[in-house]
Structures are given as structure tokens and as C-alpha cells.
Image 1 (cartoon, rainbow, N blue to C red):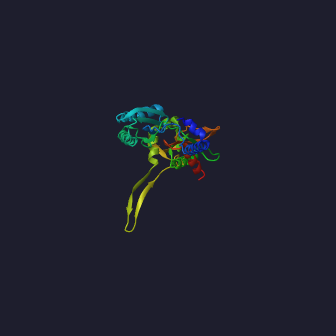
Image 2 (tube, one colour; image 1 turned 135 degrees about the vertical axis):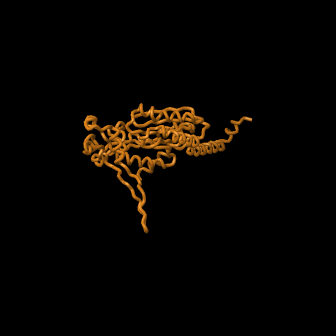
Image 3 (tube, rainbow, N blue to C red; image 1 turned 90 degrees about the horizontal axis):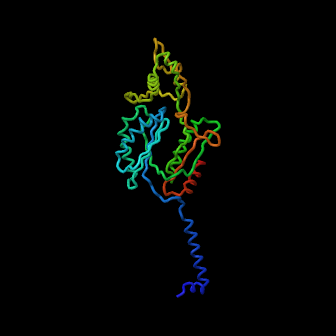
Length: 305
């Protein structure tokens, strides 16, 4: 039996069959997901730690090294890599593909807790972790600029916007590039300190003691109770200048006499530009297996609000 002859003798049937195949092909094509690579979820965890003012060498020896030694005892860990910069360090932990990422995150958090006493005591916050996928690249960048606001205020808006975007379905994480978090900066004059016989550690202790915000107790009465709050937190540079850091010959020495105190940012050694103008970037990554076009459209729909 000649199969081709069957279709040649019945052209109408052949035409209808081809039209049906074409119609179902168009319908199936419109339902295909948009994805560049196969979905491979590498169990990878990134640990971040910060110590403002510390050099890359100090971050590597005092922060990254104790953490890496503790992480090496976790089962299923295939590789450890770290990058230390001025004031911060990032450690990437990659596990075997058979390792459950949630269980690995619990083990990493437990090892961080065990290493806390080995880390510098003046770290503003303990190391934090987040699940990452090294195969994923940013699918969208947002640039924040302002002609009137300071970069520290733009950074506050970027932090809020990043939290809101991270709640969009399909968004894995939102990174902030060129962050400019507000901070009060103190530049000490070593000659003035030497002339008055004051050490840097003495200045640091005085600043810490003057900037407190702690509960001190409760006052009880027959009808009401009152919580006593010692609110001595200093929020701006102008409040730090009059702080007494030491006494010499019965005379108080104030911070403004030996240092320059001004409003600045936590890390003034990092910056980003867009078209020659200082900016702050938001780097948006999608979750594995999600539709890139749908994620970007959802973010664009959120921006006007």
C-alpha cells in the first residue's frame, strides 16, 4: 500500500489534516514557557558579614577564616569560596546536588552561632545567610537618581523598594549596588589626640557610652505602670560634637576639639554611576523555572504604585 497515494487522491482530507496540525502547533507554541537553560537548582548559600572600617586583610583573617573553618565540618559541602573587601566579606558555600537546601541552611546557621564568640566583638550585626543560585543572572536593573536628595536618602528609598519588589512572585532576591547607608563619620586628628594624651580606644568607648537606647526598668503605682526608657541615642552629627570623651586637669575634652564630625555614609569607598551621574542600582534575580517575561512585567506593573 502506497501511503502517499492516499493523500494525493484525497486533497481535501490532506488539506484539513494539515490545517489541524498547524492550528494545534500554534496553540502549543503560545503555551511554551520562556526559559534559557534547564532548571538546575544548585544548593548554594551565601554568608555575608560586615565590620565597618576593617581592611580586606582584617576581614579575611578575623571574620572569613573562623567562619570557613567552622563551615568545613558541614556534611555534603563541596566547595567554599570567599571574597573580602573594605568592611565586608562574602562566603559562598556550594553543596552536593543531593543535599536539601533547607537542611543545609539550618546547618550553616548553627555553625554561625557557634562561631559568634570567635568573631570581633564590635561587629554591628552577626553574619547573615541567604540561598542563592549561581546559574541565575539578573533579569532586570533599576537605577535610582535624584537632583535634590542626598544619596543616603535615595538609599533609604532603595531599601524600601527592594523589600517590596522581593515580594513579587518569581523574584528570588534583590541586590543593592552602590549602597550609601547613612552614618555619622568621625575623623580624628592624631596630633590633637597626642597633645591631650587621649587614645583612640578612649574616644571609641566614650562615643559608645554616649549613644544608648536601652530600657532601664518599670515604675509601679496603684493605678498605672510606667516603662522607663533611657533614650540617649544620637541620630545626627551635630549631637556628637559636644560629647565629653575625657577629662584632663579637671577640664572636659569634647569630641569636636579633637575630631571632625559630619553626616556621611557607612562606606564612602564604594559608588556607582549611570550616564556620569551618581546612582544606586537594584539588581533583580528571578527564581529558577519562572517565566522571565512574566516576572519583568509584574515588576513594571508594580513600579507606578
